[in-house]
Amino acid sequence: MTNNHIGYATNEPVNTKGLMDWIAMINPEAVHFGGMENAIVGMGSRPGMPRVIVYDYDLLCEIVMRDGADSFESAREHVEFNMVGAWHGENTPIIVTRRLD
Image (tube, helix red, strand yellow):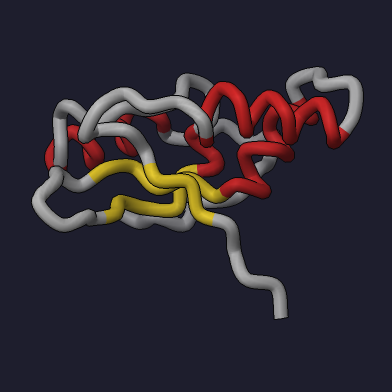
């Protein structure tokens, strides 16, 4: 399976079933944010915990904007409150902010 569809906030459909099957093989209990599949960049590990989904922060904001947020600030607040600030136990996703050079 190729992962070239992962990590791009586009309007093109994602092979959601294939993506979720891949994630389920790694950790069937991984928490995922519905509708945010294009922001998944992979799976991540933390000491003593199961692998979890890793999302790209900027791509999450782009998807929320595309889906109808009034402004970037509104999208950022949604992502911060509902995703970054959410704790769902040891299977909670990691949200990464890319370094800008």
